[in-house]
Length: 65
Length: 570
Image (tube, rainbow over all chains, first blue to last red; front, side, top):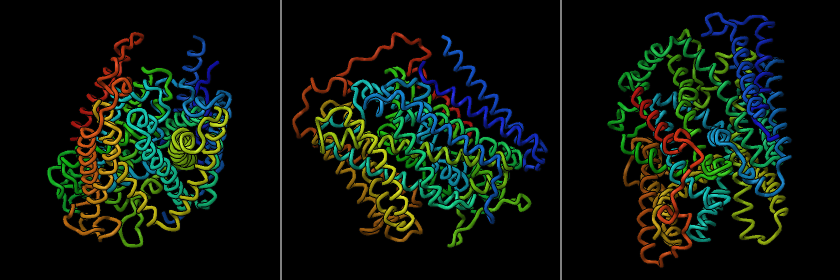
């Protein structure tokens, strides 16, 4: 199969997203300016992981065809 | 930035995982490298969207990110001209009008096109100046990055430079252009996701666009400009005195929008190489247009942080202050570190740092891959050892990668020791580059242009640029590196205005001399120009693609979008 860059991008984003998410959920909460009290690490981690999964899904769909 | 930031386990983990992926892509890409065509041009197998994003990311070096944020702080929204005037139109022009010749003639580099179209001396001039310039500019950005990391997280400058250069060296040596291009796409997404939270948090903190406008109005009026100067891009370009750039609209449009922008985006092999590696003519033509879409949105990612920072300094409660240079001026190059420090908690901090390093690496890998190709194909093969087997040139490409990185490191140490030497060198290369687009424009669209004409034009343009710079001086500058080193006959309101006019004059001189000398020399044989000149090349039909994939349609859409952006922020 041809090398598809979406696979490594997807894996990297899922990995970084998971790290941020875990850090956000389990580390003591720090108040961040401009965040209105939201847990920025957790939210951004979740978003990055979602982007990573979307990349993986796209690569998988292209690989099947 | 009183103290350096403390990294935690999560920050280190993000950085280490990133390094592992980048190297892993190099190892994977190595499997596809069998001959020199694979190494230097990815075997021309890259899909349009990958080539397009790599095209953009190779330009998105650390200096771009740091420098554009600094300009955002210094000049405000008018910095967007470097994107909406100074990039997108040229990218679309390259795609529609120039890629057919670059890709269609099957050349392996931009200097090689000059050899086919003109002659050996024009190619040699371009190849040598390009090779030296790529090495030098990676050295400069390497040193800038090392310095920044030492201020931000307290890392040793030498260690940061050698580690980052070593990683780029490893993945480019292994997988050549394939590895560089794929890593650039990955780095592109990391840069976007790494800096976006900075803009979101900053804008939210300062009270949205309205809060930003209010803060920047104070900045503008306190310096004697109209209130909207920092948030409106065109309204204050009527005269050079009305904006902090010291530039009027004509110099902006002709100097930046035409000469400098087309000269860079349409002829710089570092960028064009990405599109040349595309899998088909259609993909090669779509690549720059695909890249122009994120390009037109980048002002919001890289300029806004600078604008937010300088607006926030108006409110003492914000806790943001811009560090001051020893001479008392504000050091705007530290805007990004200040913002990372201010808004990012550990976790996001690791991501932001990774994005910064990724931007440095994408710029450096772009330089290194362009250098190894030009060195091997345009200097080593024609002038040092021709007629060797392909395996030898593949080996030479890898050796040139190692040498290029080592030379860039040497250049970095040279910058740290003798800042002035590098400033002089950079100035000389600005003179050499300024007239280039006239040569390409005449070469591609005027079949009468000859090799002697092109060479004479390039030399004349370079000399005209040097003479103009030597005879003029920006306001409040001393004669020397800033200009006026022959004699000061006229003054410009700013360094930027002087640069734009140097470019305009160099371009005009090159254009006129190329036309004049061409008419006096023997016309090139028409048969030799097929595929190299517009009127001698059959029109391309892309029967396989529908209207929505036609470069002309996509290009028109990109131009329309950029017009809308200019109007919105007029």
